[in-house]
Image 1 (tube, rainbow, N blue to C red):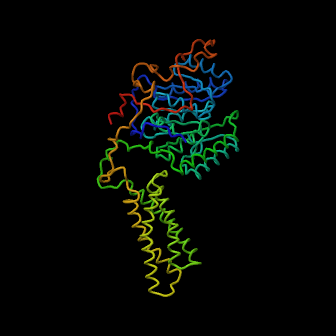
Image 2 (image 1 turned 60 degrees about the vertical axis):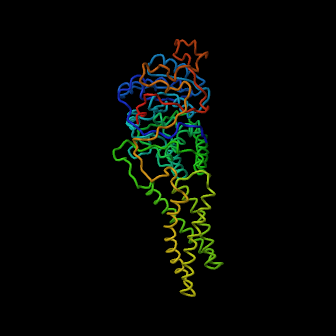
Image 3 (image 1 turned 90 degrees about the horizontal axis):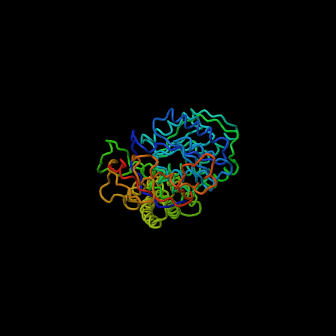
Amino acid sequence: MRTEPSPGSLPAREHLPAGNAGTPVLDVVIPVYNEEKDLQPCVRRLHEHLARTFPYSFRITIADNASTDATPLVAARLEAEIGEVRSFRLEQKGRGRALRTVWSASDAPVLAYMDVDLSTDLNALLPLVAPLISGHSDLAIGSRLARSSRVVRGAKREFISRTYNLILRGSLQARFSDAQCGFKAIRREVAHVLLPLVEDTGWFFDTEMLVLAERAGLRIHEVPVDWVDDPDSTVHLVKTATDDLLGVWRVGRALATGSLPLDRLARPFGDDPRDRELTGVPTGLARQLVGFCVVGALSTLFYLLLYSGFRTFTGSQFANALALLVSAVANTAANRRLTFGVRGRERAMQHQAQGLVVFGIGLALTSGSLAALNAATTDPAHSTELAVLIAANLAATVLRFLLFRAWVFPDRGDDSASTVVASHNPAPPVYATATHSPYDNSPYDNSPYDNSPYDNSPYDNSPYDNSPYGSAPYDNRTWGDATMQMQPVRPNDHDPRDAR
């Protein structure tokens, strides 16, 4: 998985200014590969729709994935004829690679993409990006599987789509309904932190991005869409499905081992008057209690099953100690990850050692209870033993939670009194500086094309320089390889978030 440096935790979401001058608010990317036939009608239809209905400035970016037909010529002609259209070419294929490259360099605060076949009804575009413009959500996706969606497609694609989403829900605990609909949007500051963590460069890019965003606690908005299948689609279903399943395995393994720095994507609360400093309120107590109760219930059931099994060939005291030891190790590991959110292997052995101390206390309680029972009756029934152990375990559970929270997994983010901090005073993130960043100049300065990411074209000295369509505005434009390490960038000095 990618672990490149990123700017740090995200700032609080804010509504984008209504009067942005110069820089487009929305950048819609259309990744294409050998689409000389469909590209022009797609771009003209999309441009007409945005010009007629979209209340903000916009840009349409054509991302050519190493096409071998006349797609680059068509893209260059559209760029020359329509002021809001830009294009560039990658020399390597991959939808994910194209999106990461364009999104990482774009200066628009809202980034979107859609498939060139325009299978999704364009009336869903404004509802898609509105929550991002308003600051309500971090990402937005079109869903063909929502109840109110209207979809026209064959039985085979319907079966594959629903099966794939069931796999995601079962293996990665995904809660979003449609991973592969080619109709998505993301806020720029989220993209610059999230995209370096996404490894896939093909069709699994969407899924990996959404899973990581969801696991990090980012807000994903879903829009029901009307969608008509393209019968001429060039997507290879078998290869795509195989690659996706391999991607599911890779991401699932990374999440299980805690190797992804998802804390970089942490969001503070919004600027709400209710988000004031509340002293004496332990951070995350309610969530930790719920997680601890779930883990505790499962651990108790596991412990009782182990005790019943060991009791068949050994005495009650030895069976209790052995069952409690095995269940305690599993309980500490589960609480470490699920209840207290500790990921990775750092200090894992220390936590287990501390957990064994807590286990010793629980052992003393349960063993003492069994000793008292055996002293009271010489041959207690097995059901009586279980009842006594359940009562003793309840007392040990309360003590275990208090020790876990205060000693084994203390909240090290605040060494003083526990406090819920008002969201409107977050610590400003630390950014590294990137050369020729699209943020080096304020989006409100002069022309949208001053120092824009479209300077320095991959078409310089290309066979398209002498195109019959004239000189395209690609001069002096540079596009790095999409697989290169994405360097973090510095926001412009007049970003309204800096005042926070």
